[in-house]
Image (tube, rainbow, N blue to C red; front, side):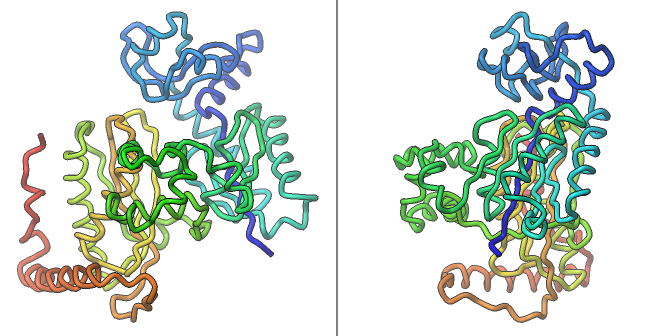
Length: 403
């Protein structure tokens, strides 16, 4: 049976959860979801940023992440509700708890969204859409907030589908629907197409997801390296990422750091990523393992977390290769919001002595030669570190002052 994946996403989670709680405490109070309102910041000081916004607030072109002062200029009578992260965690636990009564094949990717593998419980329902509608209806009836459900055969397309018309909707995006439903969308709507990547694509006259899907992947790789090929695959609906129902922490090696001050520039962030990559690589080498997948996590000063992972085609314990992949993920994820925490985690570990099976169609001799040179360098560094300690050698980037 073809795999069927749901992506379930709470509609404007922070605002919805605050609205439900406010109405529970005072049934006569106005529903925040029906008026121009936002979560986050302080009206008097005008400090902070917009964490979530209501549908009426969107009509004033208020954007998530923009300063409160700017939002108030667009809508002076905007209602501002302070964030309550303890409340949000409680609602998230209820949300995930209900879904886990249906199946344990769930990958939670943030406080308000997850993937659910429907394949093994499909026999219980008339159709995937009927099951999705049941989930939406039950969550609203029991908890008072709404969700969108995207349905497809892989995680990428399910997520793209859940981002279609909101709120409280079920959408499908199976491979046969890609040309009609996804290709006409602007390229900026594609998952993992960050601002910098979109600017490059637009300079190449790639304006829609369809344009990207029809582009030459080798040409994209010239301009965007491995991320260009990844975006081309996503534009064509290609994604074989497995659903990870177990926490990555149980079978991976990683490091994260809560920063003494918020980072606001790419240079500062990548300096931290370099240090994290060095530590993760050191731990991999110490354990005699190599990684085939890497995940980067960003936690903003608003306490909102985002993360994404990508495959490493050749298992590695090289700090340079881990750093390069981490930078690719960071460039796609970061939305310019000040950063409170950065983390790198490697998964899909294998013994460093385990033979690597190569795909003849993917062989790039330049990449192989580069990998060999890096391997020789890492082996030399490993010997020095083994004799004098891991901290004896640092790369030059670590010593630069933050701009």
